[in-house]
Image (tube, rainbow, N blue to C red; front, side, top):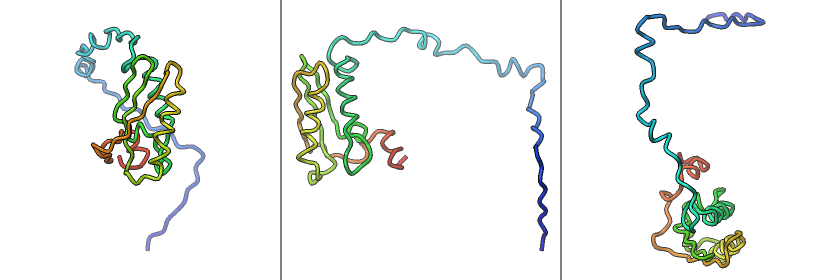
Length: 153
């Protein structure tokens, strides 16, 4: 039978850092010209003044949808993949969405909540929610953030 000894120390010395001192090593590992240089320096497109993706109203509607959570799953309905489409036109917003199942306990209340929340976004005059069952929802429609939150990633 082996015997264990315990030694108490106040401080452990820091190990030495690795260094490469060869002459050609610096040239070999020096960063080459970045092939993305032109792409990264290109100016970002100006924000859209329209009503599609990138517009202030559209982004505010998406933010409002991200504030609505499924009561059974701790993930918002947008990241869960329940929102299929958002259309903004002259202050009128149409949200096409589904639910996890037709027998979902919030099948009656969720579309009304989405309509109220989207209608409250500044710049939205009216909101309409189209609840569809085709294509049916499946876990593949979830974003990576939702999968991570649910421990599926």
